[in-house]
Length: 416
Image 1 (cartoon, rainbow, N blue to C red):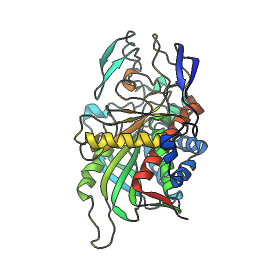
Image 2: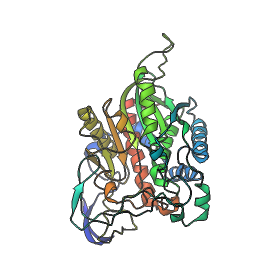
Image 3: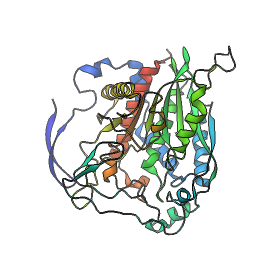
Image 4: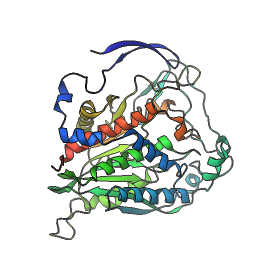
């Protein structure tokens, strides 16, 4: 039974139905959990997850085309190798934006576009949301900060002061090789670049750390998988998904080709599914009428699993999304999953017409993110210190969800 509970959250008193604690949800999917996968999920640790996010924040907002971005890529690669994911590789590409695009992105010094933008909408209003769907209820601004002086902390101004420059780019990945089907692969990604003159702790340090933690667990010497899994940390997401687009352009045609012939090695196994992780921490509910939000995680917070209803692989993607929802019921400890059909604006988009593709995030990108439900989004306030353990726990539950689903689909077992 769910307990009826009255609480004060943000704007007003609300009544919520609170779910039983993990392990007390009753029958069904919980009883079908795989013991080996439960053991692997138990290796996820909140403090380790937080420490990985914290490690990423030492490089500030990690804007692409800067020394801090390149240093973060080197650090990520070193961490992956330390986990045992030693077959790291890099995708190399060039980013040459048009002049107008080069002036955007919030990476330059001095004053640029001011944060804020349009005022919040009236209560009950609705409008079209990016990628489909409707925006209902109160809305706050979603403008991205491009103003260094909006960051009151001089440390972060200095850390993020180097402007972006066009030219060569890199992004790093490593691969867990399948034992019986090395020619088939799931792609698990998050983007390591950010913007806004903060630390990019949530967008997307939270998703990057999640992918790195999964790489750590799957790289354990006692973990075997029948199919391969690739863990990739995209660059240039904030400029228009350019890192993911470069990967597709370079690697799509290589799928399933044995190289060298007869070696049993597949540099680019055939894609079975792509899972993106973008912003995992902040789900504090709808803005109040004055545009402010609750300082506490919403009691209704959940892990949003989204597919794109307009994609060519909508049927396969929807099935993949519900596989993740089932994995959440079996393996996540605190927060439930919610499935939606308006995936948009992240590195999953270049894959959505090529393979089953989903995105995990803190809230629905179009109707909630697009309505300003996360005030740290692309802002100087996207700092590690802004988030509580309840926020970090939401990200950990997304990691539990993905680990459980990917381990199931890839045929993961523990050596006895």
